[in-house]
Image: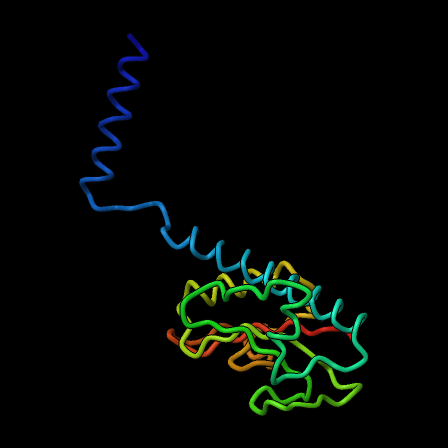
Length: 167
C-alpha cells in the first residue's frame, strides 16, 4: 500500500512540474560537453600530427599548406561546431598566413569562431580548464588570453581557443 501511495505522489509531482512549465534539465549540457571533448581531441590530434611532421621532415610546418602536410600523418579533425575553424600559426600573427615559418617562434593551433554561441564558448572554456593553463589560452582572437579570467559580455562573439605547441 505504501508503494502505491509513493508511486501516485511521484506521478502527481512529475505532472505538476511538467504542467507548470518548469524545466530542470539544462539542454545545453550535451552540446557543451561535445564541444569540449571534440576541442580537446582535435588539439591532441593536431599536436600529434605536428610532432610527427617535425620528426620526419627537415622543414617547419608551413602555414599555407598545413592541412595537406599534416594529412600525411593524421586525419585533420573537423571543427567541433558550426562556424568554428582550425587555424595554424608559426609567425606570431594569426592574421597573416606565411609560406615559410621562422625558427624559434611559438607555434600554435587555434579553434576560432567569428560569432560563437554561448554553448560553444562554454565548451571551449571547459576544454581550456581541462588542459594546462600554460599551453592553452581562450580569447577574442587567436593567440589572445582575453577570456582566461573573464567571460564575454554577450554572445554571438568572436572566441578563439589557442593551443600552444612546444618547439
